[in-house]
Length: 165
Image (cartoon, rainbow, N blue to C red):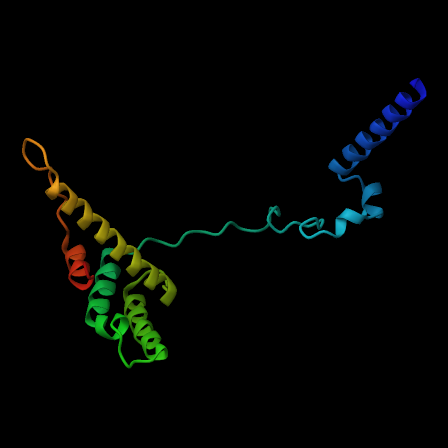
């Protein structure tokens, strides 16, 4: 029984030493790749951990002027962009590209169609949420005066005019 326990301790000690060498990236361990090293994600150079790679930077927020152009142009073309029409997808993409070109003419940062679409949908979502909060506050029951409502600003009113209830 003692012989078995001694062998088990030695094996455990060897395993721990091996793990420590691997943790320190000992060159002796790198000469003989193990069977497990062929798995994805275990390469020696992990691109996510390199120090040379710059972190992805956020782009600037939309300025008020960019936002105004976006809302104005989308409301002008809303029937062509969103209402079922005979206009093919390529035509819709061309309209979005025209909108982006107008935004980029005044923008400090170049915007893409994808970014502008996302900005439009986010603006529309926020406006709907604000309108829903106002509607909920107006319909609340109970004593006292009604809860104060958040007024919509000019842009949100334009977006609300386009969005269906």
